[in-house]
Length: 301
Image 1 (cartoon, rainbow, N blue to C red):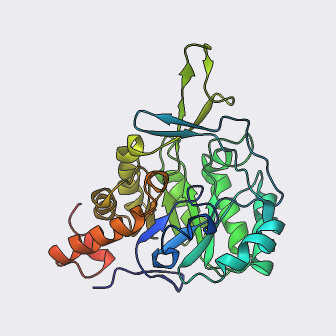
Image 2 (cartoon, rainbow, N blue to C red):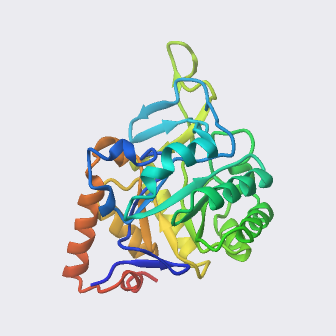
């Protein structure tokens, strides 16, 4: 049995990754789990300059998940190189840097700086964050901008480029095809769903920015459907996430057409969830006589 995945000549040893924004820069979890046993570590977003993020509170628990409005708070590309890269460069798992920006130029400058100073496994391009006024979803909802940005980034690196898609669009297959046309090597599907909570005592939104990104079990069926549609619209691998809390959820994503998965909100609930999910995937594959990731895709038309 070999459940690895190769993207642009680079290998993910297994299909389980940890989603950007839920695992910090990796060192935060070092004392809790064996990070090198993960298939891929997707870092917290990195922008060219440091970002303080949105006003507090930024995280609100909901009945079936979590609402967040972090606003891409991060240390910036220079501190990432000096403070985070030394730890990440020693990891045996694939380390994929989540790159964000406000405009195409920002993305390009950030990736170019990282390419020169912090070469890691590859890049996940965040064109789907719903919690910033510029960049993020404003780019990801426009297929023309998605293709243009992906093509510009493609010229700057030979490392894998993975474009992270938003569910907050009419038809997710349109930006998916645009990213593929621009030269993306894989797609991450999906980012959070726009949501809102109101404090009835204050008669005001709980989050100062009014809306935030909903994650957790509530969006699992949305993510699954998006992966199913996207995997049938493109020829490049699709990496599924959204509401994965246990092995059965991850297996459903693989059956729907995903070639790998990411675990997000569940990391806050149980830091050991990645190992449990991976074990469950292997047990299922052994029981069903599945020998490779592609074999998961034969069951559902």
